[in-house]
Figure 1 (tube, rainbow, N blue to C red):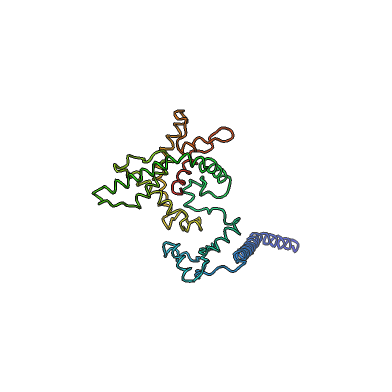
Figure 2: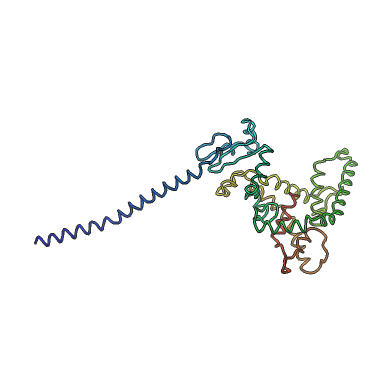
Length: 337
């Protein structure tokens, strides 16, 4: 009888200990998780601690940094310059979350950055405006260092910016200079404007005419004006190009916090998307038509830079550039020319 009861007691104890195993395992897992998170936080704090003192700057808020001041004071680059001027410093530090922004206004410090530390600062920044304008970093001027940059740079140096090509396009530039003189002369004789000439308008569209002439071998996308001035298509084209140039590398929070791209707080993505759509609406038909002309054999002589880009071949005799690369290179080359 005692033996039987003893067996029962032992059995109940055995079952009780087995039922405690899941709770014990969960407790140990929780302890391990807390320990791991503690170590991770310590490592992050240690890594975020600067090895050297940072430049002076406005006192940042905990966690958020200077994000609210930057959003409230637009344009941001002028606010940064004003803060630096008030602090009487040529180098400062502005923190956004965990990112430190260090602007420099001193030529001496800038030379030290780009000469002594060129291996660190020679690369191009990966930002939203450059990515949109270059269709995913396909061009020379905006691509970060890498295989694509090397390919496009080699092509530009040897086939587009060579002294031979510069001389080859001289007649087109001279033709547009003559057209500018004729346009200014017509404006001076125009009674409707009392002989006044809008120098800003004339200069902007002279540059646009030269670029279109060298790339597409045409002055106007449409018919233009009777006095030699730009038509509606050319005005829209030049305005879109200058819009791209104005927002290129402009300060945007999404460049420092990539997860904020979906919000577009500053509206840069919307403006750039509209400007790029306008440029592509005018460029793409010309590019596609020219590619089909070369493929069908209806053209056998290069007349402009678009022909040069289409005719480039690799070592195996295949086209060196894709249609997307040609389109992106021409879009970026326009405002950066």
